[in-house]
Length: 156
Image (tube, rainbow, N blue to C red; front, side, top):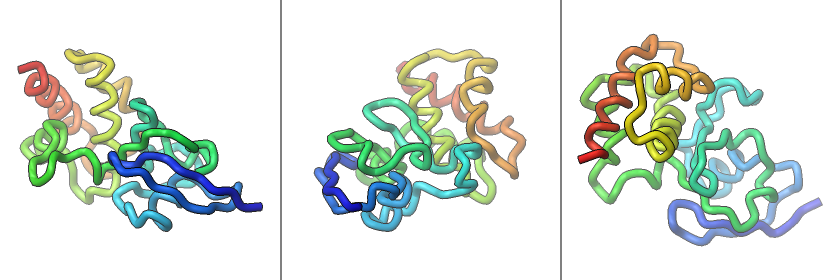
């Protein structure tokens, strides 16, 4: 069974016809060609598919595209301001908070959500909020440092 779906993705109205079983992550990646949202585990464990859904982080593999009808979605492609990195992206760059880069889009989105909710988090709060995002390369230290640095930048 197929249904029409429309939503706003990265500030643009988009629509399509999708099977009721099509996951939001697949709609974003395959139909809209926004491949920065990664599929890592298909079980909602890794966080590589994290997007902002109506302003809050959500693993895009956990809902069907039809459930996002009318939603505001921001993917990693919609985070930067033109050619200028978002402060979280800039901090990830400056603090070498990535290695292979596979988890980075989900981590960046999760940190943006965290800083929207807790503008001045402690290290413990950063670590707790990143619990749903797995990185197999860095050991998280630089990711946490980048999140704390981005918080300071955003407070200025």
